[in-house]
Length: 251
Image 1: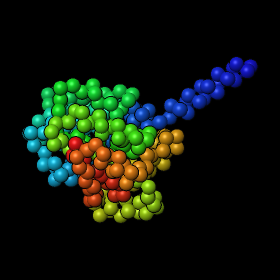
Image 2: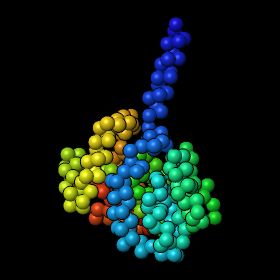
Image 3: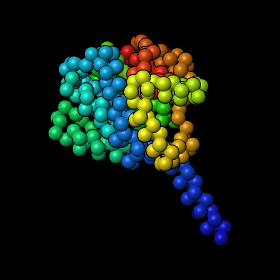
Image 4: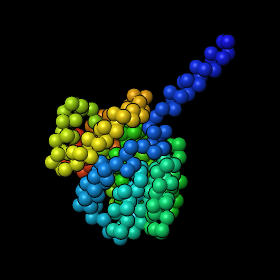
């Protein structure tokens, strides 16, 4: 009986440890086809077009590409796009979506998702990680990612890390989000996602097991400034998340 009890507990611990963001995003979820996600990519593409002035001179790396909405918008403006993601679900979606587009390459990240050394013989001029690092396990992983990106970057490349969660007043953040959704006309998309989150509790359960990474923003900038050329803070809203921070890094 003691042996059986031990095994049961071991399995229980495994199941709890298996509840994390890697597993959440590795299967179908409410975000993939949501209107809010589409709106987020519309806003992000518009704002980043002003930041980067995308052209055929650019080779873009989209880290955490998701369902490929951003890549689909930018591909006709640039030379090539490399989509990478930890999720086999999203890798499969993007491979199907861009199967007839020779300028898009889709690759799966390994268990060490900050390691990009498997990408060979390519030098990227624009690198983007939009709404990604809040699902990391620690702030040090952001540092590791930037160092890894630096090794595969072209001269004068720029790396945009957007939607960085910071320590903030959550009540004020939610109020600002609602206000902005009304002004920017995506309030009903926000409500639809909110209702789905109430019904489908998998997102909140995952969040309880592995919380969203809130970054010490000043420390992150200090740590990055040691080995990058320049860091700029983008103060305008470039996603639907109005209380997040965005860093533009010259590598």
